[in-house]
Image (cartoon, rainbow, N blue to C red):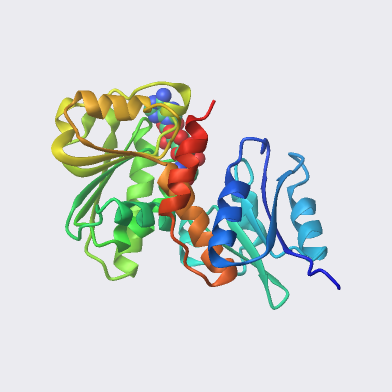
Length: 285
Ligand code: NDP
């Protein structure tokens, strides 16, 4: 009896050994009853385009893209982009449709999915976004679309925060949304906030941010996009300031994968059991 060849998916990056994406997608596939193969591909730094072209030429169905290729993926798919990908100018999901390469960015959808899971998507809330790099760019449109009243972007380099806030204001206008956008350096953030999202890479380097103390209102959720076995420096900083609602970015990681899975397979999966399994995986030495 002939065995069916599974559809092929993969994540492309450099390096890629650390990626949890195969683990996540295999669990989604099991949940959805879909037979697939999901690999890790380490593309040469000067060979991303060839890697993508080759993968789809050999019948591959979908790719996730990670550091440092998200901007190159945007260039490859620029004729057929989803709204979030166009706004982020960086792509983490690629697929073929009618012989054309399509791309989108699911980081923002993943963050929103996780914030919903945590019960923290409240229309009218005031959101502080720390950072203005690739991850911050990817979440601005979904955050505005969530109906927040104010989105303040603060960055070490205040000029980058200003540029992203201006971009966000234009997006809000074009979508007919009345979110107020503002910006500052990290040391000049005004007021206190309902939701504080750390999208800087300071935690990756084990550093905490030089933030004013008044930012963390006791009812706020402090969310670090970085995740790990131990609380990140940002989470520890928020905890020390009396914040009790704390979350790291593991749920966002699983959420962005769920949004890619939905694009490729048209199926919405339950992220909760996969987050629990990954947390266990992280805690196992
Ligand atoms: P980028 O390199 O594009 O941006 C880095 C940002 O961090 C910039 O705003 C930079 O400020 C700021 N920054 C770096 N070091 C410091 C520091 N010591 N103090 C203050 N600010 C600092 O990185 P990404 O945007 O791609 O990633 C940011 C974080 O988000 C990473 O921790 C990454 O792991 C996480 N992430 C998590 C995801 C998930 O699914 N959970 C998905 C994507 C990202 P400046 O402009 O001044 O240099």
